[in-house]
Length: 142
Image 1 (cartoon, rainbow, N blue to C red):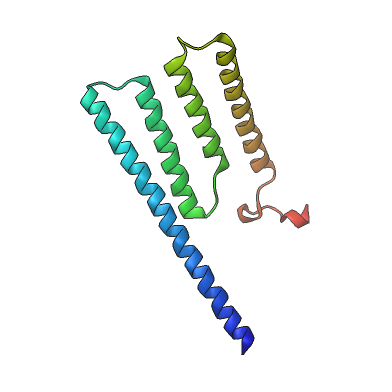
Image 2 (cartoon, rainbow, N blue to C red):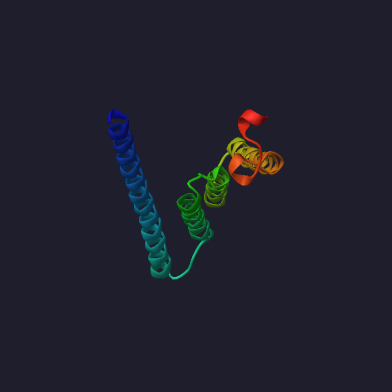
């Protein structure tokens, strides 16, 4: 009898966590859609988009794609976080390059290069060593 009780409590806990998880994803997704529309309205009000506006919309698009993938697969695509960081640093360069010191420009471009290399490493490793869910061997099998 106690085992059945604990299994029911565990199942209830999993259902509550899953519900909270889904609610959080919907809130994040709705916030991304809201921010995107707010940015579009500002672009329309201004009459023309600038490069900073377009790059910000790309950031929102990448965030939305990341939430969508996480919603479907329950896996966080780390590469999307890196793409967002690259886009944010590119946006920073595009906006402030005229007033930045040379050393800061070099630091930001170096960070973009490192992030790009990290995407390359992640892509290579995920194709060379697929996870168990993708049909590869389990970690204990390696």
